Image (cartoon, rainbow, N blue to C red):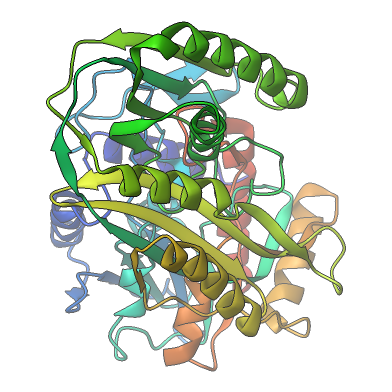
Amino acid sequence: MKEKLYEETLNFFREISKVPRPSGKEEKMIAYLTDFAEKRHLAYKKDAARNVLIQKPASPGYENHKTVALQAHIDMVCEKNADVQHDFLNDPIRIVEDGDWWRADGTTLGGDDGIGVAAMLAVLADDTLKHGPLECLFTVEEETGLSGALGVASDMLSAEVLLNLDSEDEHEFIIGCAGGIDTLAHFALQQEPVKLGYYYFTVKVGGLQGGHSGENINDRRANANKVLAQYLWQLSKDTEVRLCAISGGNLRNAIAREASATVAVPFAEKEHVRVALNHFIAQFEEDWLAYDPNFFMELESETEQRQWFLKSLSENLLNALYACPHGVLAMSAEISGLVETSTNLASVKMIGDEIVVSTSQRSSIESQKKNACQMVESVFLLAGAKVTHSDGYPGWKPNMKSALLSLMEKAYEDLLGEKPKVKVIHAGLECGLFLTKFPSLDMVSFGPTILDIHSPAERMNIPSVKKFASLLGEVLEKL
């Protein structure tokens, strides 16, 4: 076991956890990386997309070995529990050591992909490792659309092989992934003064597990936006429902854990609202409590509001949110257990003079990714919304004849005494985008075990970090 590399990986993880790095706001982390390189007299460069490449010469005697690229993204998903005070732009992540696991205090930990970044820093700082020439690529904005990888300069890499350090299971090597695209619906926020004779309340959904919208999409985890829309839509069948405000979910690649809406109904329906909620909760718990045991739904009375949505907007929005598909659309016919196509109803936000509904679609088949986003688009067009799409990103087609994969499988078996699982995943990785600019790259993605990423329940297994660091050092030497 390469003990020093393991210990330094954990030390660097602690250190970068103090550096705020939300997606799109990575300036402090970029400054940390360039300062790190300058202090160690390592060559570095940045491209127009703000990615950073730090180079390290080969160890003595390894000058003729292959140039190897290591890659991880520096941004993190910034999710917190509703009762937690945390400013992701300024506050450090508070690490909690819990036995063999590290987690954060009510927020995401940032193990995705902070542990990959930390391992790369440890490799760059360790002069005892044996390796060929190294190129360490730190990308930005992976979590919000893989923008860094999309914009990486064509002269950033010269390596023949790339180790992507952005996977979350110590037993797995990833050699392929799904492509993705975002579909956004924009509703004009049309409001008018409220009328007399109405009862106002806020209904909240919370306590859901949430999780990654690719890796957890087939784990039967409830989506708070769908739960809220279902209750309000069913309520609207018995009485007039007027929305005054609505908010749910946060990031495009996270399953919504929390949602809320402020609503008006005729005052005579006040008791009916509570009875309907009790019936709804009872049915939800019967169907879902085994999967989301901490679910709660609560109702609070509100003072009279000044404005509410136009009746047509309330109806169209609830119809669209209830009808919008969420979850697995198709399973792979070629790889058992692999989700082929899915969609995530990620967030509903009031932004300026709009209500913006964000969704994301994934598929390992390009035509089905397009079909999924067009299906979601059609739902919102019927509801009168304007629909836009992101540029999207391609999938990563697996190469079962990869020389790098063969080398890593042998290194894993020699080091740990067992065979790794070789997988294609439904989540998105930057590797597919790298292939568009560096088509000859041989790539494998691996990492330590991290559970419940993209949620405050995120936790990282420390014994697996030791195995990950040892394997990384072993592979670099064998390459």
